[in-house]
Image (cartoon, rainbow, N blue to C red; front, side, top):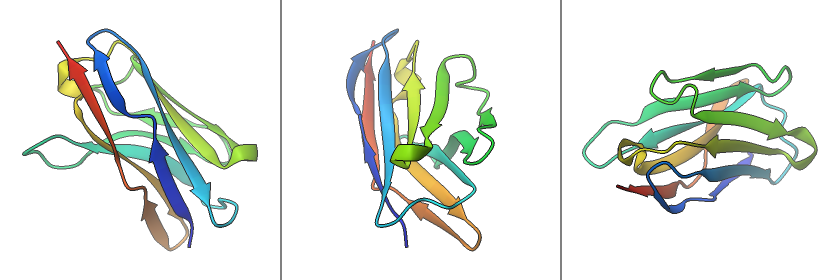
Length: 116
């Protein structure tokens, strides 16, 4: 089983930037995608972004498209979520995930708080 470690969250002012990381440990990540969901207080977990591990093809939720960029460094078994132009409504716990053939693994989550 791959262990995923979320990091990079924190407090940021509206309009600012933040970079989240999701590092796979235990063994090399051989899955087919990594990405992030987020969950704000009182709301359901929602999809944020995804990247195909082999091709690098990306997809985004409409609410973050044009502001967030997902990337990966295969040599480091790590995915990144560059958050720019953040808004108070981006405040949430961000959870990375990794998809393999028969399972989805989750990181522990990292809190992102955007102040207005």
